[in-house]
Length: 247
Image 1 (tube, rainbow, N blue to C red):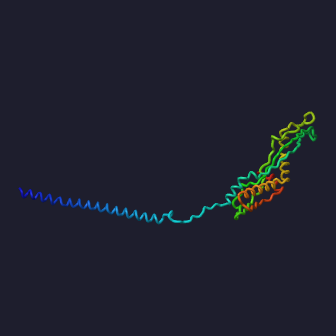
Image 2 (tube, rainbow, N blue to C red):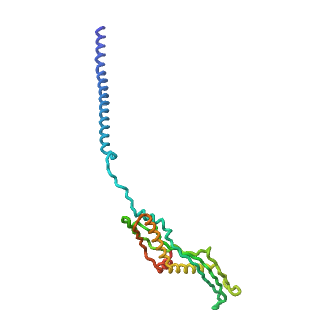
């Protein structure tokens, strides 16, 4: 019995030896892995710091170029803002008679006349909104600007300042009752007369000169010492053609 008990104890001791070895080897592997991880982490941190130091531009004394601005764009924007100041206005008052007959066969039976006093305006100007960068040349303190051609902006009859001065249907009122038609005809004729007079008086040239003065003063105020504002040609014939061309 004693010998069997000893054998049993010996077998228990022998069987427990591999389990202990396994635990020891597993613990050693875990410890080794932890040590390797710490070493790699510290090594990678130092390497990252060194690389970051190489590419840290804030530590380098590098001169950066100054930002550039196209001066021509600034000039174009400033000039466009004063476009309304270049408008030339021609105004006049005209007296226009109109008449409508009533015929009986080949004979005139009666006539209706209307006398219209009209006040009209013609506006001309240089559309500075059409100015582009290519129209501006800058050299140090000198600048040259090529303005767009002057143009007619509009023409109109001021009905609040116009009136029918006289309306007469003739003997016994036999003339046709056509007051609205005669008034419209008088307004159209007045507008043509005012347009022609404005062109003859050089309304386009006035707009040109006004634009040249306004733009020159603007650029001189901006600090340019030499300012050359070039104009597009204008003439009364060009003016009349513009009125005859439908918009």
